Amino acid sequence: MKHLKIYNKQDILSLTRIRRFETKVGERLNTIFDADQLVKSIEGSASRYVLFGIPEDLGAKGNFGTGGADTLWIPFLQSFFNLQSNDFFDGNEVLILGHFDFGERDAEMTFAMTKLIDETALRSYASALNLRPPQELMLSPLDYALKIALRKFSNQRMSVAKSVRQSSWSNTSFDVLPISAIFVRPVGDQCNLSCSYCYQSDFRGGKTKRMSLEILRSVLEAAAKLPYRPLSIAWHGGEPLLAGKEFFRRAIHLLSEYFPKSGEIKNSIQTSGVLLDDEWLDIFQEGGFAVGVSLDGPRDLHDMFRRTRAGKGTFDILVPIIERIHSRGLSLNAICVVGERHRSQAESVFRFFSELGIKHCNLQPEFGSLSSGHASHVSAEMFSDFVCDFWDCWKSSRNASMRVRFFDNFLVEVLGGKGEDCVFSGECSRLVAISENGELRPCSRPIRDYEAMGKVTAENASFRNAAAVRFRAEDLASQQRAKDCRFFTMCHQGCPQHRTDADGLQVVMGSNVYCGCVNESGQGYNSIWTHMLRDVEALLSRNASPAEDDALFVESQTTPSI
Image (cartoon, rainbow, N blue to C red; front, side, top):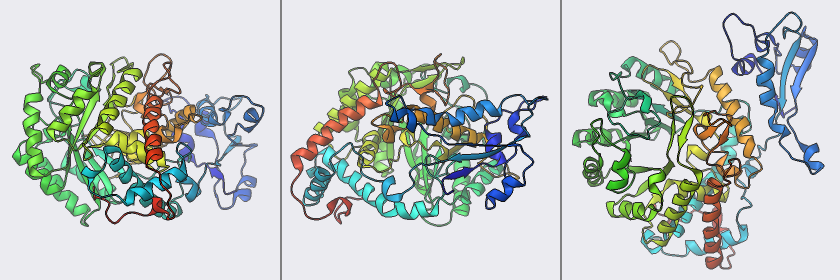
């Protein structure tokens, strides 16, 4: 019975939408009282029926039919649990046991090489690469990025067995995953700018409400009890700097109180950048914060949508601040939000980033939600074209020092490792966001139906509840839409915020507008992966040479530290 996932009452209630003056079947169902005494618990139950699931589609596939039946168990449960309890069927006569989970848990298989690239060619290439000079400027951007990816993959393989032994979850588990990152939103959605494409544009007005130190203390106290280290704490918004300098000074003091050991946490802040000055930079340097700013390219592209409340562009304010950050030696990441205005502009953006000295950047699709709940976003074709063009500019340049998170994530994933970008991890339950009033939500990005998931207070300093379990279940069910895609393990149907239903409403269980395997255009992430994979295969083919050592899994002593 090692594959049997046994449900408890919280599991059932997490999929049950409780309504006042109504009783749902999910509220009346029974569960076993002792998982260690399974048979005894079932025999001792007063229920007439035992219900359990075996999610599978072997028969359909064996008869050359279309698979997918294995994805219907959780949607069935949601429908069943939310039936109205009545005199003919009140739910109490059923014991819900659980389901069989045959998801792969073997450590070696978890990080096995993907079938996307030839393993022999990769081993030969890795061996040849370790013989070349380590200086980044003597390697092409793709060579250097792949070298870094190989090192990360090697480190993951060495640690995966230990992590799997210490944890009972897998990415097919019904349970939420252990938290590894927290978004702290000290002023919630409030912002001092008026960017027309912002997904939080409906929340810009009104008086700024700042997180109290009592709530912040409760958040950090709960965070300190989490086992994951280093724990990522991202200060986000809206515009988090509106909380004020004194707030962040006190926050840094509290961080040192709850996380006294070096390396326990990784602090970062995402800001528009326009409020930054030397005093702010002193604060972030003291706290060891990495700084992320929004920069959409040269002046004409950036100022088109990133404007002040008075309608003025922010480019001329931001660029001198970026130069000052560079002079201070602070870690800086630039996020470029790609919209329709970026059509045929990839070369211009890449050249501008290079000239400005940007060393770390990422590319994100423009995606917003209208007040009606409908999504407003850049097309999958446009985003795909821009990313592919940016990749071509990057790999053909001599700027090997520029790290593009989108590309780095792809290279680690194509090896069979785990990238660092939450968008493609398939593990959103590892994240949690806390707003200024202590309200929980799955992410700093707004996700319909999950704007409020309970509160963190001094009396209840917990990040987990029934809503979090339900979000995890819906996310997993949605991922299964794309499970037959060649690139599924690299994408997992992307960010839940980017999913919509047939009417264009944002919904976790919908189809991702940027996944070509499920959208109408057939383009998107799959087009990007195919484009980049072609270049990786060509690189391996050109550089492969006979090698006797197992260089792929040996971290070179000369690998640059990043």
